[in-house]
Each structure stands twice: as structure tokens, then as C-alpha cells.
Image (cartoon, rainbow, N blue to C red; front, side):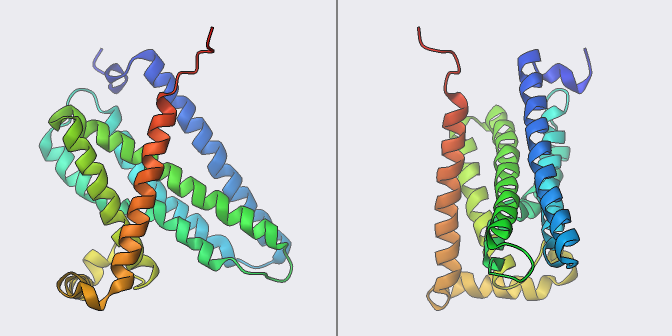
Length: 230
């Protein structure tokens, strides 16, 4: 069979479809919470979270496309798509920092906004981990297990640096095209003078370690046997 489904066994396809269903249900919950808040308050303040979720879906969509491709993915496809994936990947865990927007507001309970932001942050994190798992599997098939974990660590550290650039310097993924000189200068300045920018490296390292521990935990939980002990 030459279709993309041929790359997966039936159990693997079933697991992937189940994952898509669960992620779809979780994303639907976030959308419903945001829409209901708009209806309740007649304000569109948290609608930006829907855009953030869309950006978080981009790397997941790219990695899913590569993961479902029939046969080995050729380098001329993998490298450019992988570069775009890495560019957009920080948008997924970035939603965790939208907790900065949590504060009491008139017209809606504080706990409601907490639940709303947490569901969006959770979806961003799960989309990031699901996407990273696909990419790690691709690297492992080509270069081996050790190289795949090096890739994971580098991707998460770069993602954490991207989170810093987005949250504190207010850059976004397309600034690499629309504002490359300023972006390059700010990055180079922090690389050449790390002691002058402790927040940069504090955020990068702390979020990088947190994301790596979370990813490792999710991977280990996924390997636990679901068969009851006799």
C-alpha cells in the first residue's frame, strides 16, 4: 500500500486518531470558554488566545504531515519544513506565559479567567509535546536515539529563548522576515554580552529545564503499561 497510512500499523493509527480527538475536544473547550466570555462581558479581551492557539497548531500540523508521510522523508523536504517547524514551535509553549494576563476583572469571575487561560496554556503545551514527539521520532529514525535527545534539548532551549523574545521583547515568528535586522541585533547582543542580560538566560534556562522535564514525564507516562497486573 502506497498511501501515507502505510507508514503506520493499525494500533499506531488508532492511537494517533485518538490523540487528535482528545486534542480537538480540549481545543474546543478553550474556544467555547473564550466565546462565552465574549458573550458574557461584550469584550474581546481574551480573543487573542484563539490566535495564539492557531499559531500553536502550525508546528503540530507540520510535524503531523511529516510523520504521516509515506516512506522516508527526503532531506530536501525535511530540512526546509523542519526549519519552518522550528521557527513556529516556540508559539506553542509560549501560551504558558499568557498567565501574565490573569487579574481580577469586572463582569466575569476570577476563577473563570483562570480556567480559560489554563486550558489554553495546557493545549499549547500538549500541542508542543505532541509535535516534538513526531520530530524526535523522525530524527531517531535517521540518526539514532542519542541524536534525537540532543535534538529535543536544543529544540526546547531554542523554544525557551523564543518565549523570551516573544514575551519580553515582543518579537513574533514573522519578524525574521519583516524585521530581521532588529531581531538579529537583539539576539547577537544577548549572545555576546550574557552577563548584561540575566533575565534572558534565566528565562531561557528555567523554561528549558521545565519543558524538558515535562516532555520526559509525558513520554514516560505514555510508556506505562495499561494492562492490569494479574
